[in-house]
Image 1 (cartoon, one colour):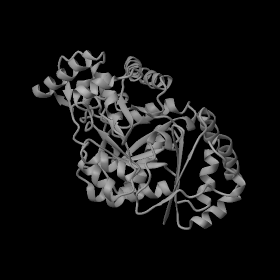
Image 2 (tube, rainbow, N blue to C red):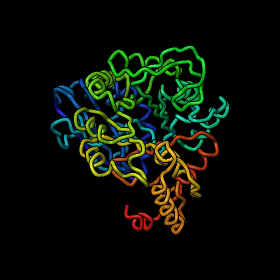
Image 3 (tube, rainbow, N blue to C red):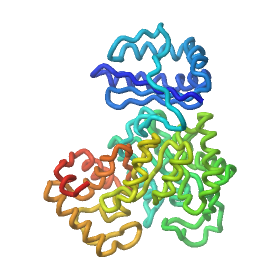
Image 4 (cartoon, rainbow, N blue to C red):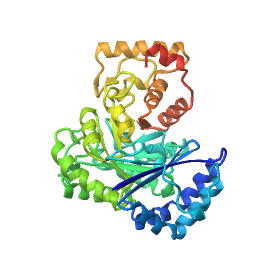
Length: 418
């Protein structure tokens, strides 16, 4: 397998025009690339820099087949208009800049692989009635507020409210342009019908209409995705994540990942990854598989940087983007006026609460609130491309996004030692 990476640069001021034209041509270009022999391909923009990556068996044959495709020719003409420097599409494909060995890929930031900005994402567990119930109308209003605030990445799972989160999220997203948002859901827990007596016993305020059954088998993964699409009411998801395989490593790495990788190769999903509340097994997945992304919950925050020494540098080296979740550590960092709270889904211990108060005092000294710093901190690491936040109300969405828009002075990070 040949792994080819290219790098070019846009003319200053041409970013918006390039993005619009690229989005228009992307579906046809995807078909052209795959028909020409691409097993994996990525195009992403970082500022004015454009990066191109392709995995093919025969690069010369791939170039020859691609050269005559009308969609590719249209894309090359677009490139010629927007590139900084001379480029003649009639001369053939872009020159090879470097070839990579092994399974290492250049880091394709999660926020730009799909042509959609996803610096901040919407975590949909709360609209699945996490802890307390929401009405359908309140859940819809919250999702709409996230859209209005510019959020374009939405993450859900069958686990969240026994499918309620997926149903509520899909109902709203069905009315949005499909090419303008990124959607992820998860595999690993199948929902099996139950008698509906009583409440769910796993943290969600919903009737116990189903029970969760762990299943990381190939058949379980395919069934899970099929059922998720039915609940969502959509015809595709973008990112499929293996969900909490803590006690199922062998089946998750031996069956779930290969099944998802095959779907990625077929173009059924755009990316595959793993979402967990721990980092050591995520590091194992990064080392031993070809995942695109990890959703790391609660382990790169103001109060817990346990993933920083090993996992995050490994992701940079391996080209795996990190989506940081749980940045409020389940609630403690979500309010500046600390009067208690939960840390990792349990009452915060005294020493953790004291440390949070120290951080809040330093934040206040620099004109920053604790949740503002909590949202900004993960993005300081080059591996982290996206921060996803669970939000349950219009007010939470608006408040968080207003804070996200405010700069955090470098002096605060220096004083915190981060």
